[in-house]
Length: 627
Image 1: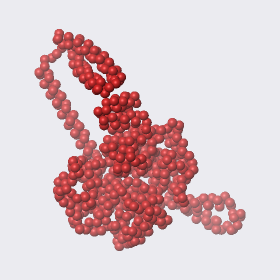
Image 2: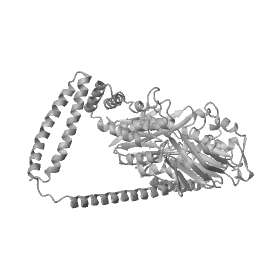
Image 3: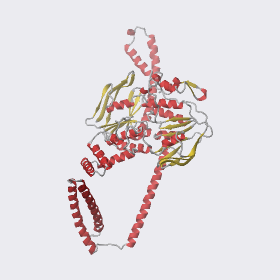
């Protein structure tokens, strides 16, 4: 039974047609990803499904009672809210109870407010939900949820929005680039959570490992049509290759047949009525099939790289701290030619600070960083194009250079370079503000590479780029003659382009691992298994020694002594009496009128609970020897 039916959806922005007559359905539990080049309307299609933006035509129907959660690519929250308040934005009773309880904990001297919050938590059965909130915030790296949304970074807002939709526990979840701004540990946890969940999932993501491990179906936008593949991303790649080969064969056959039909058309009299109408109509259809393009346009990266000298960048006993947070401590390293470094680690461990120090934007507290004279950095950062919305695409490039030098002495004009980056002549005159998120990132990549850098520093380069562009970028970086330092959460990308890692483990600990990310994770899992095995072995040995010592020091016990039996019987009566007193105090506590009495009763109740626990523990100790 379908949980979603999308029928004949169409959307146009001015003269630009994004999609037309798109139809598909989803069943309960299916996990579907939309794959397409940037600018194909993926995010717009998600907004139409989520009901955020109406399509020009067509309809979206969900099964009655379906709860929908939606994560946009760029979340927007009302100013003045803390991240925690933004996460609890749906104003449900359970969310209100948790916010009230946390406010009360900040003013523990107000016993009446705390008591009301505790009672409301009990009424809403919100204690399990509180544990769930703490787990989600911790896993997504939201360490301080009291920050105001207007002061939070784009990454913090994205993680807060993801936490909000996860805590809503919807029946149908819509995610637009959910892995952006997450560290690798958070992505792997989210991957496991989504894979095990029973809800339906519709998402857009460029993370190929994520697609492979989470999705049950792939929906591709290809040449203006929706093509569905039942299987994960690996299956999609296999079947897509088969489909492309069949299409190419079909087009070749149509071209050969068209030549024969074209000769027949030319031999016939000009008057249309004298020709076979059905054969003429068939020829028109054949011509349409023969004119299909089977070769797809792709980004071409072939800019020149400036010569790199023998001295590149050297770190000499560099230290850097922000208050008590240690980023580097007596760190030394010398970059080599053609080195390709991956930088990974949890959010907040200092990756971005290290990149800024490498670029010379932040000075060390101690030590020195020496840059070679021939170094020309190309820095691709998370902020992307700044203050460019009012400019046209061609203006962004020509402000840097009118003519761009390529390899082997070739040159391109700015317009020709943009065409290599899939910006048609018409699109080059569009305002930057009209571009999709992925198109803006592609344009930004163009501006970075056209400066002919010999040391590329890429900070989250995969965010919002489509998979086709990522594959071209991977191939370019594999043969890149300069140095590369890349911070990325995209595991597939890292596996393709880096030859070793700096793993930021926190507290100024940096591990230099000789290999890619998958190799590092495999090694880390082995180390974790070995560590657990060692801890378990030590614990077992300690328990064994403890038991041996107890057996040697204490004579074997077979039954209770006379005094222990009297104690055992007395404990049963004491525990029963204390339980009755506890119930009486709890009832008085709920009807107490003054703060002084409330606090006194709470202290007495706490003492009785501890007394019950101690007596129960002694009773259980004696019970094993009782007849």
